[in-house]
Length: 143
Image (tube, rainbow, N blue to C red; front, side, top):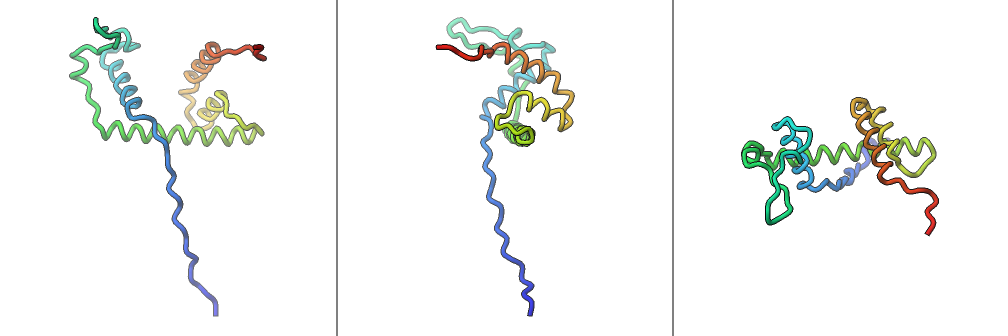
């Protein structure tokens, strides 16, 4: 007689993702909305400094217009985290194919291009160039 029972399949272990801090996500969302509402390239142009503290403050009329629900913040947080995991995983495959162990900024740019995000790559290349210029360390460093 043949045993036709199916083997017990263990449910996959839950993947635990570390999310970006919700406050960071919310601040980025608000900054984007501030720029769109005011049609200004940067939020800094619209800020007012408090006299007693060095914290920047948005104009009152702007604060009243912009509201983001907790649900919207959480969904954005999950989406951004998932996108980062996806891009990083694909970049890891790219580095492994190249026989390397370190993901570089160029790997991230290539990954964006390979995944169909070509419209973002010019901005990534500009940022990467500026980042390298600011963080340039002549090699080797002599102490």
